[in-house]
Image (cartoon, rainbow, N blue to C red; front, side, top):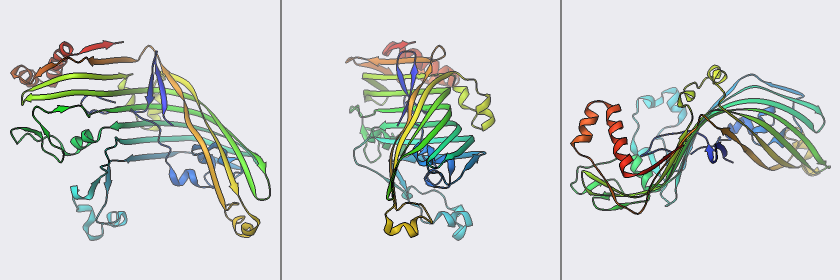
Amino acid sequence: MQKYTNFKGFKVKTSLLATLLFLTTISQAQTFIGLQHSNMSGIHQAGLNPANIADARHKLYINGLTFGLGFNNDYLKLSLPFSPFDLISNKNNAQSTKINNNWFTENLNGKPKNLNLYAQFRTPGIMIKVSKGLSVGFMFKNTVSFQVNDVAEPLARLGRYGIDSVKKNTVYSGPNQYNVGQNYSDNKFSINVNSWGEIAGTVAKTIINTETYSIKAGFTPKYLIGYATAYVKNNGVQFKLPSQDTILFNRTDISYGYTDPTALANLNPQGFLQNRIKGGGFGYDAGLSFEYNPKATKAITNKKNRYLFRGGVSLLDAGSINYNNIAKNVSIYNGNVDKAFVLDTNLSRAFSNGETAGLKYADSVFRTIFTIDSS
């Protein structure tokens, strides 16, 4: 479930910021797949389902420091001509092989694309088995998360193949080429960047226990610590290129907001602890777990998992973080009126004086084209 952050009057999906025309949305990835699914991982099981620690395999479990990185997307699939083990052992000189575009396969189904990248520190953590069927736990987590969500497929392909203006009437000559004079409107996306901490306590208990099955429940209340957040939401920009040096904007609806972006720079445990707390709020995880262990298989299962089958349902990362006075929000919009942005000598002259001067000039022009609401 995605988090939400209150920006003094409205909510923003909690996660981190990237650039793509203007910018966009994110959530905490519940990965740590091997660790959180293991019956021997103590308090870490609560990250997948709080109920899972009710019948813990340890009387006491202490977590010192756990660090994880995760990345996933539903647009490009990587198929290597060698295995990861070949890469590690440098078999067949795999490490010297340059990345080849043919290794990537596009998922082209007409649906929006998504990307998630995160880094998480867990320290300290503890789980105590109070009695049979009752366990409690505590965990302190810090997470940096970056998400790009709901990217229109043509825009995702543009991001991959880039812009090619070699042909006279073609701006983008990739697999779905864009032509001069053509309307472009299928370019929605959102981006979220977030840095936040969680102080979480878990209580889990077996509520029904028979000879063949058991049902367990768990709850994790959290205090959420906001370090920094940023978001961009592009609901759509409609434009066309009547010529190679002019962009004609029509309907536009973009919003973005951010707190102090420098707080995202410290990605180590010490940096997290040194970050100034800029926001706060409350959240929770909740879950139910069902385990089935028939008499016919108990001789085998009791020596291993204590169940033949386990299933569960959980609600994760519900809650909000409130950022008030330090948050900045901007909305950019334009009605059904054509506004022209000319790529003339004034623009190139401004950028010749440096990137800052160029961006300042471009910003001044955009403010004459769009209606901009800042708060």
